[in-house]
Length: 264
Ligand code: URA
Image 1 (cartoon, protein in one colour):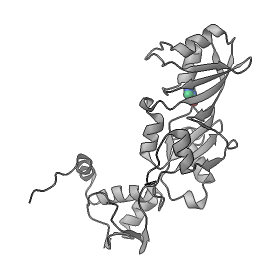
Image 2 (tube, protein in one colour):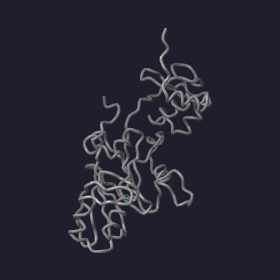
Image 3 (cartoon, helix red, strand yellow):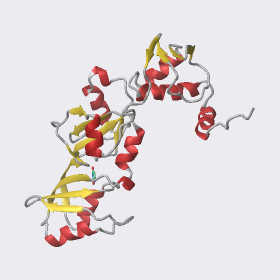
Image 4 (cartoon, protein in one colour):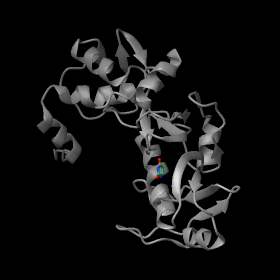
């Protein structure tokens, strides 16, 4: 009988360390499905509390199939990935990073403080980045494919920022912002640029390079004093500062153009 070739990701996982391989995939599945957060899931597997098809999960296995029956402490759990998206209204001061060498506080710490018990079992990823001093819409999700959809310039999902600037927002500057600007390392795509009063400009971008808004405004002689992301796709942030809410599947699909996993 011909043996199926082992996929590269499984080879790599094995190279990372024998018996932890199943823990790796199983723990990811448990976290993605909201059963246990990543570190607890790994501990539960190591403690022999998790079974797959009735066997204690300690040996290297292929990834879970939909038909596999997973149980934690003898209770069957549903590990099929289901897309969850949370909209968080980020306040100033928090970094969008797991590391926090300056001890200023991260969005993940804030997220965990705000999460209701029903959402604590997920492994949450931040969708893109905002600078520490930027406020506004930041999504969290359990679905890496949603991260790719929302951040890959190829999907052209628009992100709308409102900047308060010092300097005069002339029509000529707006035209340059709209048409694209050659920055040091790349030329920006055509963008939306609208005046929002004397000192505010709204920029709509379909890409998200490091400090892009501040750099674009700087290139036309406008210094950014405040920056706020008010919308991604057709979703306009509708939660108060420093709070979050879960989006419905219909919102994820209709406003962000992403088909949630396991909608069938
Ligand atoms: N562009 C910036 O310059 N900063 C942000 O936080 C987001 C986009």
